[in-house]
Each structure stands twice: as C-alpha cells, then as structure tokens.
Length: 246
Image (cartoon, rainbow, N blue to C red; front, side, top):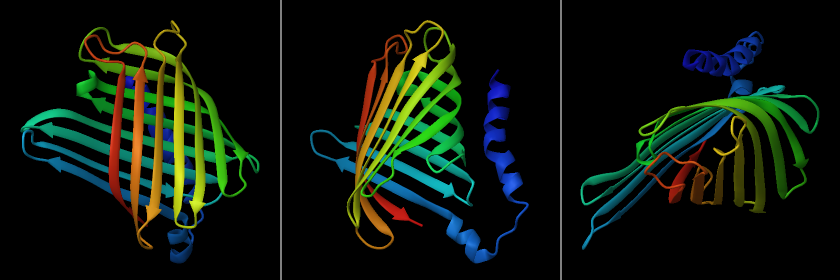
C-alpha cells in the first residue's frame, strides 16, 4: 500500500509535467510561469530558561496555463534548555487542471513526520474538485472537496489505514497593495469508523518590506479527534517569519 501511494503521488506531479514539456517555451515565458517563496523564522530566549525555535519553509508554483503544479515544504523545531522539545517536517505536492473559469480538477499527496505528536510517518493522497466561489478583488475564496487515502505509522497503538472524505477552503484578502490576510482550513473525515476525523487551520498576515522581502505572522492549529495514545489532540504553532519572494 505504501508503494502504491508513492507511485500515485509521483504520477500526480510528473505525468502532467511530461505532457506540458512537449511544448518548449522560450526562457522569458518559462520564468514568468514560475513563482515561489522561501521563509525562515527564529525565536530565542535566555535567562531563567533558554529556548530556541527555528523554522524553514518554502513553496514553488509552476503555472503554464491549463495545468498548475505546487510544491510546499516546512520544518519546525523547538529546544528548551538544550533539550529538543518538538520537531516536525511536512511536504505537499499538488497538481490541478482548469476545467472552466471557476472549476478545477486537482490531485495531491502529503507527507508528515512529527515524533512529538507520536506520528512517525503519515502519507496522504487525495483527488477531487476545486470551485472558485469568490474571485473579485480584494477577496478570493476557493472550496475543495474530494476523497483520498491516509496511511499513518504511529509510535504507540495501531498504525492506521483510512479511506477519507476531504473538504478544504482557501481564503485571501488583499488588505492593501502590499499586505494580505490568508486562511486555509481542511477537514478530513474517517470513512472507516467516523471517529478518527481531523481538522487543520492556518491563518497568516503578510506585509511587504520591499519588492522581494515580506514579514509574515501565522498561527497554525492541528486537531486529531483520536490522537496517538499518550499524546494530546491539539497542536498549535505561532510563528513570525521573514519571507523572500521570487
């Protein structure tokens, strides 16, 4: 099953790219089709308690027209008094195809490793439809709905293999020409028993410092209705990051 998930994830990203590669654009057109961000965050305190929080993240988007690809990675770790308290790595690959002015077909796969939440490895695959509900500036709202499969290896208790129903929303509000507020929420229903549902939500405010640099403040919440035995249901991350745009 793990091998099948990896093959499915690879096909979602690579096969459309091979098809798009048949038409070779010139260098300027190719550059215009690529965009992305890279961000770093760090917080340190000293005195009665020495703590350090460090984060890295990045996103790359390739948008040649009908097809669109997106890759996202993140790494966060926290130390307190020279003891590692938390560390997580995550990745997301997504491909979408325009069906109409507002409707897209999408497929995506995700990876998570978070030992301090008891998750040794989580692999997810998902496919469905995305509809642009609001596309009038300064607001944008896209709703996604689909089905997928999750395989989760846990440090305690039984490993999980779940069929899932997925719903998500992506909202953006351009506050000014150089700042915006974004929110992305996702709900995953367990089709096996209905009990092991999970929810995530991330809110971020970004303000430009220059043409290439921005300051970003974000809050992320992750909730598991049936967490790994011995671990809590809810995890949150509050971060302030410097973001480079390209």
